[in-house]
Amino acid sequence: MGARALKVWQALEAMGSSEAPFDFEAFFHVHYAHAARAVARLTGDPARAEDLAAEALWKLWRTPKAHGTLAAGWLYRTVARLGFNELRGRARRGHYENLSYAGG
Image 1 (cartoon, rainbow, N blue to C red):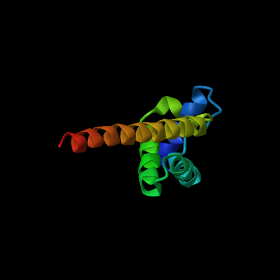
Image 2: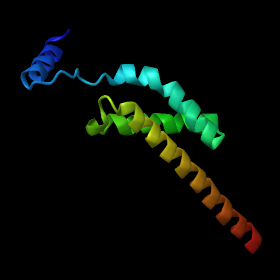
Image 3: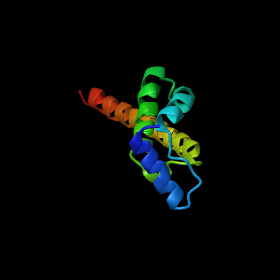
């Protein structure tokens, strides 16, 4: 354990926290592939699903309140919302593309 990590750990202990710091790298390795598969089933586009899973993990990284024991639930809810947003965006684009073709 590095000196900085040791200081963080000691500060957490001093605050009375029994919870270890959030290990984002380990969380990423455990959950990325599953999140990408889940959103791929929703959108039908595996390549776009990988982007959406990475975006959800980036949002998790930037949201410290989501770190901890409930991070997996937060991640999968976020992935589902991003997937539904993707589907809505496709439908909206398709609608306006059809209008532009019909208009001449």
